Length: 118
Image (tube, rainbow, N blue to C red):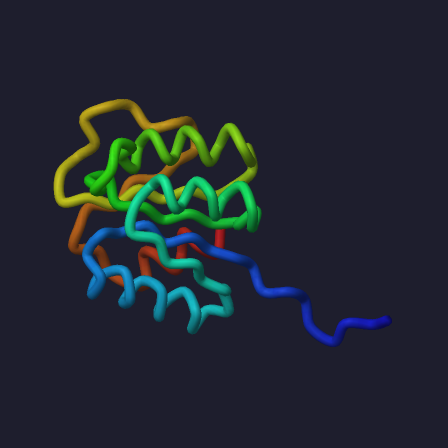
C-alpha cells in the first residue's frame, strides 16, 4: 500500500476567542495542517493525548482551570518533540518550558507559519 502523499501534520489551536481561533486555524490549514480547535486547555489536553499533534499553539489566558503555560508544560511532557507556541497580549508571567516560543499579539501570520514549519 503506497501512500501518494504524507499524512498531514496535526495542529491543536487553543484560544477562547472564536474569531482569533478560526483565523489561526485557517492559516494552518492553508499550510497543510489538520487543525483541532479547542477553547480551553482541558479539551486541548485530551486532544493532545488522543491525537498526538506535532504543533500546539495556545493563548496564555484561557477559561477553565489550566492556562496556556501549564498546557505547554503538559504538552512537552506528553510529547517532548512537539513544537509549542504560546501567544498573548502580555508577556508570560511564569517561565515557559524550554524550546517553547512566545509570540505577542497581534502577530503577523508569516511569523506563526515560520514557527509551524520549524
